[in-house]
Image: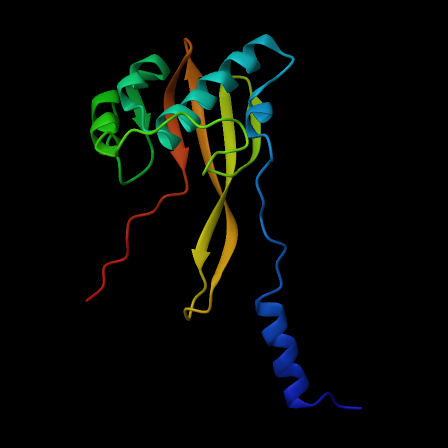
Length: 162
């Protein structure tokens, strides 16, 4: 028996939206801990970057957590503490959120040696304008002497439109 074209079309439509939504942890601060003392210290530096700087915009505190030479692999932001503070620092400062009240939904935090990787929920519009979907964003920091010294993420340059 041959499947009908309508049935195949319906199956294709269902598959195009088949996805388990990405969700964040209820208590994200717990993810920034480790039994290993070095990994715990490194995760705590990144906790402050994510929560205090990126979430609450307390960029005046950035020198506590980011090195002067901060190597930035995001193509939209220059390397160095001063350029990073200038890029993000114009945003209005807010309160440091309590655990479980973060706008940034953290999925996982993994630390190995001097690297800390944070996966977060990213909500994007569906192509064609039919609602939104969730995906995962990754940031990775190298911690040197108690400060973030290097950063990677998945950012790309914007596509030029004519």
